[in-house]
Length: 349
Ligand SMILES: NC(=O)c1ccc[n+]([C@@H]2O[C@H](COP(=O)([O-])OP(=O)(O)OC[C@H]3O[C@@H](n4cnc5c(N)ncnc54)[C@H](O)[C@@H]3O)[C@@H](O)[C@H]2O)c1
Image (tube, rainbow, N blue to C red):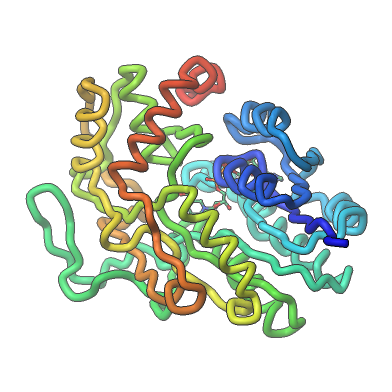
């Protein structure tokens, strides 16, 4: 008899979580989502997930609640844990650093403690961020007509020194280091992904977070946008299907990936400046952006591109969806769901 595998996804009603949930439901897993539904769009994502066919369970819970987490682990005994729940905006982390710390640092510690206390053999993956490398101001950068370029390197690999910036950088970085250390000290089967620029359907982009989706929303609804800086800032961008495939590969290669950290983004071939994104979106939509300029945001990197060769080497992963195609798919999803996206509150300040 084939036993159904269980995956527990914290933050599973969020943008990445919804895409991961549906991926695993389709793969035949029992999917248990643990989410407090605090994010704009989470309730809408959950309603959509509940309508899909397959084994899907929802527990309303907070990662700060260690007792509830323990009870959920004991009840469902997950084979895989995908820890995505987080306070995700730098801006909120500055207005409320304690809450940011409690969700991201303590919440992640709670997940690890539950794994340790239940002697779990689950493979557990933590979604960290490129922000753990800080502003990277020492890297020589060339300013071109429409984008910044690195002068000396192709991308940032995992050996770059950590340099946590802002409460969000510190709290996510804390979770990142704890996740790695629990593999070292307690033998847990944990993996860390330092992600950058993830985008795709089910993303409810707001001005503070989810930049590609935010600009899609603003263009569709013809809201004016602010460009913080000069618009030449570059990020590597990764379509969410490619990320979820990377999660799955990292889980299935856990003997190799445990205790390891991977930079996971689009890499050099999937990178966009703001001006390049504007050109793609205006081409797709036939609409024009209304924009003005604001000062650079604190801690904003002029350019961030991941070196993804370690993920390629260890579990044979590379992104497949081009930036142009991915942006087209995201914009199409927003157009199809325009009333829901607006009603969810993406323009609420
Ligand atoms: N989207 C990106 O580009 C990106 C880049 C780097 C890292 N990440 C990381 O990936 C993860 C998922 O990001 P996302 O873009 O899907 O964000 P998201 O905000 O859409 O999803 C986060 C989910 O966590 C839930 N949540 C928040 N606080 C919680 C709490 N205290 N207890 C339980 N649930 C809680 C929210 O309701 C939401 O559903 C986060 O950890 C984020 O830091 C995302």
